[in-house]
Each structure stands twice: as C-alpha cells, then as structure tokens.
Image (cartoon, rainbow, N blue to C red; front, side, top):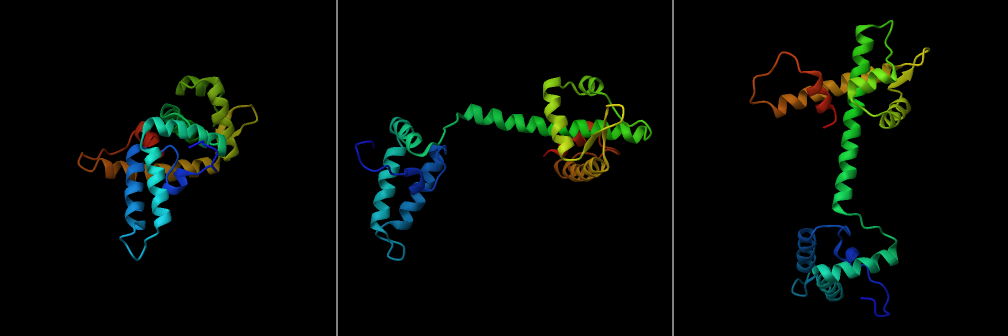
Length: 202
C-alpha cells in the first residue's frame, strides 16, 4: 500500500465514507463489482473492476484497513473520529436542541402569564431548567442570534415575537407528531409542556 507507488483512494473507488461500517463496505463492493464485471457487456469496465477488487481486498481486512487509514490520513488530511466521539457529539447536539426548546417554552410561559413583566433572570432560568451557567451562555447566545430572545431594560431575558411564533409553530408540529406516535393511546385533552418540548426537537 505504501511501496513507493502513487497513493490510491480506495474509499473513493468504492464510493463510501472512510468511516463506513464493514457491512456498508461489503454492500458497496458487491454492487460495484456486479456493475463493472466483464460479464456485463453494457456496463463492463475491466480496469475499474480490478480497482474495485483491489480496494475491497485491502479494506475488508481490519488490520490492513487500519494501516491503510494511516496512509489515507497522511495523504488527505482526513481525521478519523471514533464512534464513541461521534455519538457523543450527536448526543450533545440533541441535548442542546432540547435545552433551547425548554428555555423558549419557559420564557413563553413567563410572557404569556405576565405580558408587563415577561423577563426572567439567569438564576431563575438555571434553577428551573437545571442548566449550568457555562452551558447557558451558549444557549443564550444562540437564541439571541436567532432573535428568539432578548435582553430587557432591567437585564433579564424575555422571549421575542419571533420566539413566540417559533414556539407556536413547533408546538403545533409537535402535537401532530405526538398524535401520530401515540395513535393507539387515548388522546389527552392537553399535552404537557414536557411532552411538547421533547417533540419540538424531533
């Protein structure tokens, strides 16, 4: 693989992501090999077929694939991330989306209950939603950039018109989702805020 010859991108040959599973690799190989096999006059491509065989021969073996991945990184700059790290990143994004929905729902309720005093202080929000101050800074930044929340004159946070519209739109969509996923259960007269907030990010 690294014998002085020009680098060959086996993942590109098999048209798969460098971090694809062994099963995905096998499916891609079978499909491409079948397409470009010399026995298929309409799509036959002997050179491409041989390249596919060579690529799969290396990547199908865990030890060879590991060595090739090192070569791949050196030649492409691609960074291989562990499944655990990728899963953690995905879960963090989902957690953030949930917190955004919860903050908006909390401030929506504050404004709806008291239009003259719609604001809430950072401490009240953190205590009510069990959110750390460090993480809240990110959530507040994001929601302000989206124009969903704003600072009041006394330094508190309040939901904006855009934020109210967003909550209403997401709540309506969430209610439809809940009805679909819970169609076999008796429909309650009102969905709880927790149910709606959870469905808002689905």
